[in-house]
Length: 195
Image (cartoon, rainbow, N blue to C red):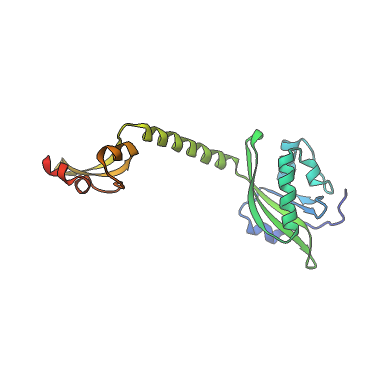
């Protein structure tokens, strides 16, 4: 379906989105009214289709889940809402942050614009960090009575320490609760005095 609306992407709106890399707009029939070279290249990479003005954006999307989410988001923008969300193409390890905005002419919504950042690298890095944190957390929790502490010295002699991190086994062994951030001499004063 060809579009009758030939409105360019809003320059003022583009200034409100920090460093958009992919930009496109469609009319209320989901047909392209404009797009930048980055969007054209990304669509070619992801779908294998060389897009043109007037083509139906939704018909270009081959992944049913992404097509359904995009249609839902566009319909929301067609109702006057501006919002952002994250879409993914897991099989390609691609993650996008999308800013959706209605497009107006004479106080009437005539379509929607999307300003998209490819956040794959940052998103995957954060997932890897979470995975590493989970691994070390489970390793730490599996140790039989473990405490990570910061030693205090006076005249080159250890005099006390502060609990920075303890696992549940250590708390069970010492019959203590909530000791992280506390000094050993305050948590177990009887042991401190006996040494």
